[in-house]
Length: 75
Image (cartoon, rainbow, N blue to C red; front, side, top):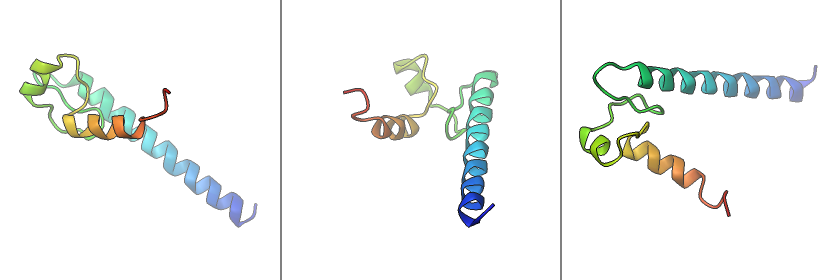
């Protein structure tokens, strides 16, 4: 295994950890009794957002970030 292989392995482990953390936050968001938690940052989703978008899984900030990342992918 050379340096390139080791670097790739480190990057893959980091990606796996990030995915695991994201899934954990999403699971907590779904399990939070009496309040809704953002699936990305773990912060509470404000009541006003839930009135406007009842099935929201992200706070406004995280939703904007997600949408900005995906601009142009569906063209």
